[in-house]
Image 1: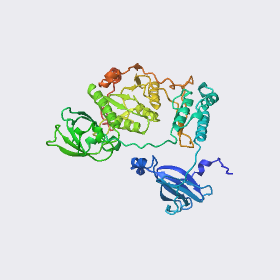
Image 2: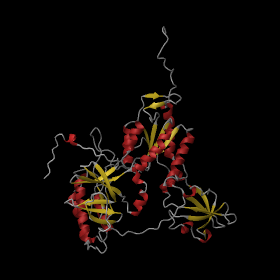
Image 3: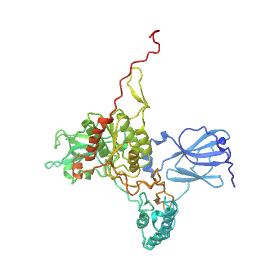
Image 4: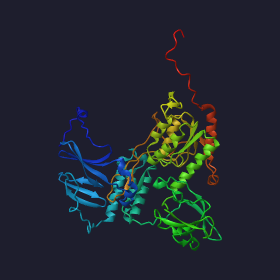
Length: 530
């Protein structure tokens, strides 16, 4: 039995002299601490590693000697476990496992690999599915935010849907059944997913990041539009804008890898399986081979990022044009790392605009809305200037003008919470449609025997006055309701953005702030008598 003396425990903390990083899986054996570490430099090949090893990434397996006060990097592993007696270690390297003695300075697994070939297990699927069903019911019972289970009879519902368990003959059946059960709670963020299912291999279609049309006479494909991209980023690169490609709208695609497109039913037929692989396009400024040239391109597997980028750039250009560059525009696609990156990329270059339109339409949620709100609310208290410099607010990066937020029914989760914060703090008007209305938060799933997942709504917000629960099952109401006409929106007429421009123009009439001119320089040594 271990007894912890908590009195003065804060004075018994010992700092380890190890590099900053992301540490996990700490275990102590005798006078050595074992742990996994990842640093920023380890993330350079994450995309390749995730694709090859199913989302897992290797970490440095390290040990720290309390006696020598030194760290030893033992090797790179996916994960590890130490036996209860502290004598053996199970390590996973790529897709293989090995059982070794507790390593001292270097990972040696060559003669200790765990042979899994022929290791079969007989599973009673129906018994397994029964256990998972009742485990899911118990987890929701014990972790759901409301002990009253939103007023439903949770035991009765367990028995109601359990009557269908004998008819479950596939993991999809079980997932559907659990989904119906937890759906009775009428609550957002109640999800079931995963489990053991056959993995269906998919062949990725190569996409050129362009819109094309077919010439009726020659059957060649005219490039009507090339989507903009960020070619330094693998996920947002636009294939036809890569360095050295030199293809422009109006050019024609005559052949793909030597196959004339005129012989194909569709251009995509020649691009099957070409994602992230080199493809040779026969290109010409006219729909004939005379004077044509061959160009090597690398199609992408997903061009949705390119369409998003084009949409944001269009909105930004429109706001800039209609306001003579005085109003800024930012779109935040989610409240996770990508959304925070997008906010940072768009916000700071526009920090000196006179007003700002913040767009969270379609925001998929996350957890960083407090960070974004705190940055937008940063208030300056004075102005600072350096010799030969320009005056700027202090603290720096403070926005000095009025703001509005655009929202819609797809502003969800933390995308609900952002406009709620914006409105409650009086930061500006909300324009668009009532948000999704799902804000009761979730954490990582607890384990199931087949690797499935169940997300349980665990923490819910209520008003600071204590008068009731907020946002969930209703959403956030805009100050000005604008429902985009789909036909107009398809043609490029964004009525919600137009209303935002109209409102911000009115706001600028009364809330505009211009940094005042530099006052007379001080004279700290006045002439006597003055």
